[in-house]
Structure formats: structure tokens, C-alpha cells
Image (cartoon, rainbow, N blue to C red; front, top):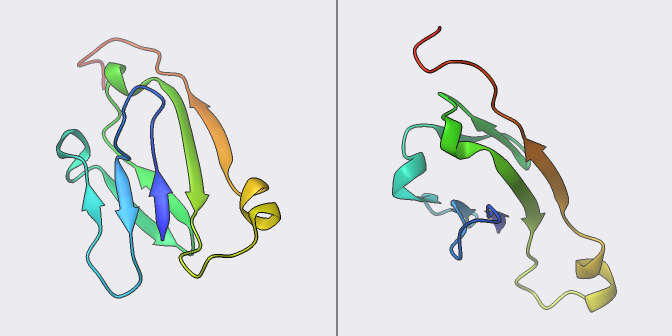
Length: 86
């Protein structure tokens, strides 16, 4: 399972289970997709998208806590510019 929560939300904006269609938060519909392995692409960036995002893979087979603690990557998305400038 791949999970992409944003710090400002309680529910992840993207959840993907193998073999099932992804759950995508309504605010990100049509703007976020899984592109390769565990890489996520976010398009049509909005000013409100700015903030911290974490991408992690959750192992549903009950993998060791040591393995799960090291899982995840954080990235800060900074949005600059004028709306409608593009």
C-alpha cells in the first residue's frame, strides 16, 4: 500500500493497494497519480498545495516495526508565483 498524506489533512490524499484502483482525495482528483514504483506526480499545483508531504509504504503483512520506522520520505512543496501567470 502506498500512502501520500499531507500534514494539513487527517486522511491521506492518495492510497493505493495492489490490484485495486487508488483512493484520491477530492481536492487532488485528476492532479495526482502513481507514475513508477512508489513515485507520485502532482500536477496543476495550486497555492493551497504548499506544505509538507510524506510518502510511505505500509506493509500489510505485519512487517517488523524496525522496518516500518525507517519507511517514508518527507518533502516540502513550496509554491511561488502569481495565479494565472502561466
